[in-house]
Image (tube, rainbow over all chains, first blue to last red; front, side, top):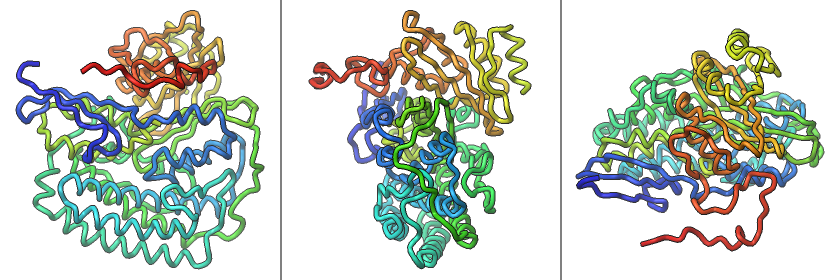
Length: 364
Length: 154
């Protein structure tokens, strides 16, 4: 186009989360056309599933959305257990709920940190990762791993909670709650620079959400009250009391606020789960190699980035016949092509950060 | 459910109902030309295209269109079978915009042509990747092993 410059940003660029590539046509400082390119982190996760036993796929799930590995493990475990009709004991249900919510807090803290960093707020990044470290240490104590814990297995989890870990979790949660309520408000929501960079920027309307099939915190920031934990409760979410934060503006500030408020709701859920944590076995004994009869199974759960789904086709053998992963950010990245038009280049980075993409899950 | 009855009336006997319980309906259409008609009918009740999942039962390929709804968690699955001889199906990207990238992905990994798709290119793999890797007959041969990347022209 006339007088426009083509700007290639990424795939390896400090402001792109992971390996997302943006191709922007820029006129002056305004973007007139935006294209996205994905696939730089494609590791054939769906093909690998067809070559592995059901129990051997967990390490791959860990590396899909590497910021919320436990949610991915729980999703895959639920899919296999639904297909094979395996009942898991109530203690396992509660432990999984606690771990899923701890991972959700960690994931949102990474979002807050990296969002702050993209706005030039390095302090926010250090602070958020400092709080995340509290939970990381606990996950390490529980499972032995940090980023890729390998904690969930078919029928439950590999280990029970260590003695006295409940008190440590509660202690860490009250620290995080205090920080979110006070320090983060001072650093972000009461910070004039932050407000002027985020308010009214990158507005996603309700129609756009429905057009592109976006789910999760991005949809909730645009006034769509839909959270699978409430709409179709799984694990122990129907036994705990919590709310779904919904904002109506649809700008980057709302997306930030929704995720911040979700941290507080997750803290509420974990506290109730620890209070009601039932005694008993923590897993059902399931053989390492299982055969699942011919059928289709579809399962969907609320990951920190939206609605993650698995379509599992089995044919009576010991490996999946086909495993399709529905990734929520895949659809949100699609919307960027429309969202980035007619805005300034500096704001483009804020908008990409507010979508919170993790390319491992987009490219699969 | 109401939707299934409505669709049955719309396509007259070309619909095979596999499951119709609370929150989950699965139908199979015998004639793949009816897909777009069905998608238009469905859009009133199910406004969210979850995903398109292709399963390779060579020589037949089964496409699973999974729909959901923003107001509840009901699922509606349409199954369409296509054969390797006539390896194409009508695109629904004009009806559900979110199908755009899902169809590109199905084209990329299985090689299925979507008639009327606005921009049918590979999405995850490079443009010159040999073959479609999620097909059961995909072999990791020398061409794949020695693939070095795009011939970039500067």
